[in-house]
Amino acid sequence: MKKKYTFATLLLILFFFFSTTINSQIRFTKVDPVTDVITIHNYGSTSVDISNYQICRRRVYKTLNLLTINSGSLTLQAGSDVVLSSTALDATSSDLGLYLDSNFTSPSSMLDYLQWGTGGFSGRESVAVAKGIWTSGTFLGSTGPYFYNGNGTQNGMSFWSNTVLGIKDIAFGNQTYIYPNPTKNSINIKNGSNQKIIRTELFDILGKQIILNRNLVNSISLSKLSSGIYYIRLTGNLGAVSYKKIIKN
Image 1 (cartoon, rainbow, N blue to C red):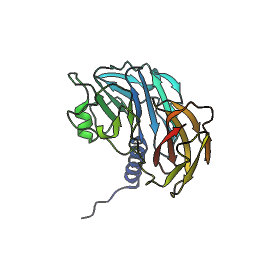
Image 2 (cartoon, rainbow, N blue to C red):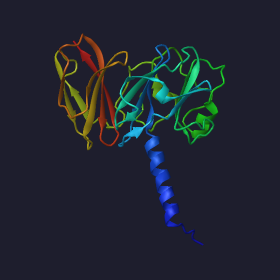
Image 3 (cartoon, rainbow, N blue to C red):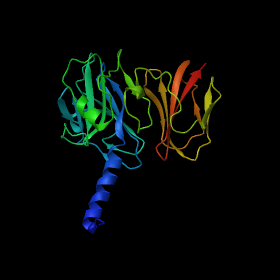
Image 4 (cartoon, one colour):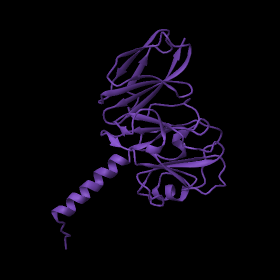
């Protein structure tokens, strides 16, 4: 016998599906326990108000609107970051979870998770394991900051690193090109994919954002920057992310 659903039930199912899809694309992209700063990125295509979202570190909780906003907004636009401080992170050993609400034991409420150090604390690893976004007993080593190198849907320790070195093309399928590289003055951007680039960011080797363009650009001037290694992040209109390493002579 086929199960029949009322119109109201179908609306509720659709609402839950789309709400879950949007919320699942809000996640950490940088966590620095030493300077007590975190970056949250919206990989979705719709703006999301995350002011009442919560962080949980070693079972201590705080609503995002109680943190200090260093840059960005808690009304997080598609493809945008918000940088927050005053999180009271432990630089030696801790975990950090991002939650949709205060149901801290619920896997459906947890949006993102990572942990570092050697353990020995009471955290929310079991919730992350139950959700399928972390492997039990795994910890990021060394010291932060920690950078997320995935495409927004990928989870686990293998997509986190304490360096931006080695970041590779994730979701554009190696169809974005930066030239000349190395360069002295400027770089050109060529996009051979079927996605439109809606955000271009340049970071230094420590992960600090130094250039941000929210419109399509074909070139970026580096003439005022010191010689060294930089990283460019290109975000597509369908959520794809591409990272490139740049050498400025």
